[in-house]
Image: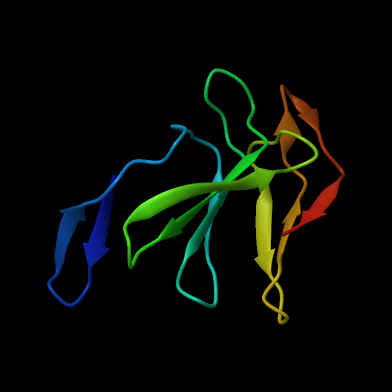
Length: 99
């Protein structure tokens, strides 16, 4: 994985996530950390990982109740993250989860 250093205008190598994935979401939290939710890697994922740019480390921070891909994430004013919809093997989900 690489991160973009906007002040240097270059990409820098960083540590890799615990699980490779696609069709996930990545959201920047108010403290600068990045929350990655769900996605797909051989099967739909329900786990969430947190990236801390100050230490360049990834931590698994829990699991959603449902595995989901192609979902949306909304940052709420109170700092919480709302994960909604998506799909699980072609079945559309109408559930929502709060982190």
